[in-house]
Length: 435
Image (cartoon, rainbow, N blue to C red; front, side, top):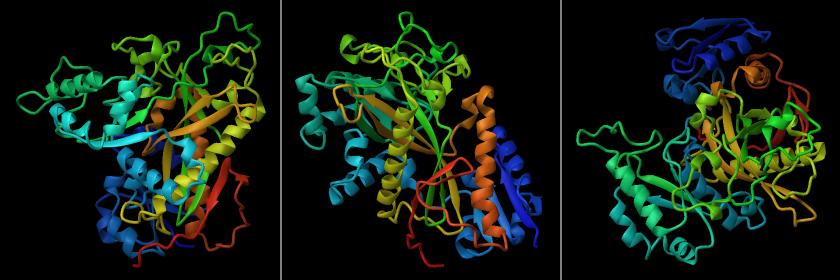
């Protein structure tokens, strides 16, 4: 049995680096760790489980049988918000019965460098959005297409609000081209990040109180409803099998929820944004497992009901269905997504849970917000680091070991079946580019 040469390189993510090394140590194959310099010798067989920029993608493309990579070469269709919006809109036009119709917020794609460009956009690509804003019926969220960790996210509900936001971004670019010191931490420079998406604000979030997970059985009278989103880890393998990691995180806002309609133009984002990157001073106090929320009071309708295990199971099933269709949509745009047989990749996917109590058949629905490559797993916090250890070991067993093993005839793994805490939600043969 040949020794696997393993390049592990995560210079800006020490936790990921340690998790990868621990996971590789748990497999049953001999492994020799190599440096970036040794990679120039084209060792074989080779595992590159590294940050995207440290992977030799030419080796991945040319040596399909002996080189395994922890990232697809082309996957912008998934990880860039404006590309994701485009591929979903194209897919739902082609497949009108897709679950993505209801699982993705109304979205507009915007390319803009200066605030005064909005004047022309209101009569062209943003005409429909302008009509909605003039009616005053809804709020919207602005997101840079290529930023992460909450950078540049803003909420607005008028044309004037949006104009002010882009003017703020313009002013954050000082004369020397660097960001000024007195702007908000989440400001961005529009001359450098020209692509944005504008998504309809979902005003029916499921509201729970994470403090109730510490003391179940509360009457509910002292609880305050807080917004949260789900962080789902999914693993794509080859071309292509897709798996959802069953241990899903719930990331809560730092303040009780306030309806957008009750706030003026000066909106406090802390009640609406649930990104842990914007709440680092709170540690992991607002991070829970989805399973830990079972039995918590539902505070979005005042009914006194609690979240049940069947509610959670239905959410996981719906998440799996949505993700499968997202990857099908991406696969139809081979310029920006090409699954390779000798690659795998971990994504952190964010979902918002909507609560519609008037719907007797299905009270809860999910809306997919974004997919992140190389997700910021360190923000999970020390209390739940054990799930990350389990996740990475599962990836090693499912994606790494079979590729290099002499025994390729593993037992069948059907869609909807769970192994190693991974729920298989897609198994399709998508033609990859020729070598």
